Image 1 (cartoon, rainbow, N blue to C red):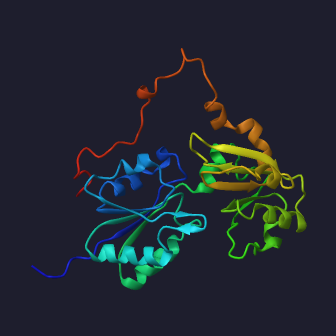
Image 2: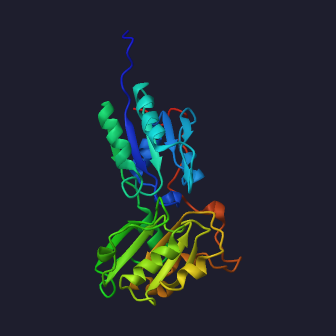
Image 3: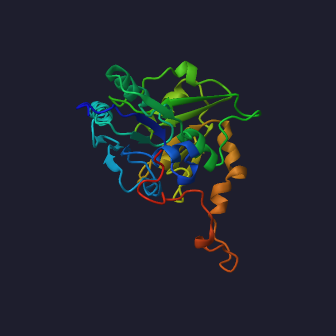
Length: 282
């Protein structure tokens, strides 16, 4: 028997924006054959229930201004785990290639000669917009959509404002809560109207989702002083005005006649825990 272990493989998997039923079938299959899961903070507990009991779980989550593991350490961890001969799932919220640092992690794997596969997920922008009743594009409102990050190192947003402040365009801002006032001021300063509809969505796609709808000028004031426990995404553009008519998820959560309510235990779900610790092995 060779003293050298075969190199394992890393699966970079998008878990979707929060609702566990937005997990893809391929992601489910990969999770159920994993030997070790390296997961972020914004992963629904129900998804971790799908992982075989034998699999090791490693938390590598990040919260604003606090990283449980620095990114360089995460990169090296993936290399070390794969070199130990195990199948590794790097599980990220949303889609790993949309502000998820998935590309950075894969570059490290390439340099180390580690095989990998990418399993895309429903992005936060797509999922949160859909559950908030805000289409990102619409023939009468927006013919383009732009994803930007509101994360800054020195507190001052440094973006291509000319490209961002275009008419009939939807702007989706990831990680923009901390710098929201500065971002909104910059957008107005570079030509967007102060009364342009805007919304901040907390914990999008989850039962606790909250949507704060306002305008570009008034959104920072409406958000100020509120405590947010979940991630917040900001959407700016005329499409936000459609929310009043399209907010299906909010209406689905409205109180119903208890005599007509469907018992929770009777609701079917496509997600199931593996039948045994060896489920999913080939």
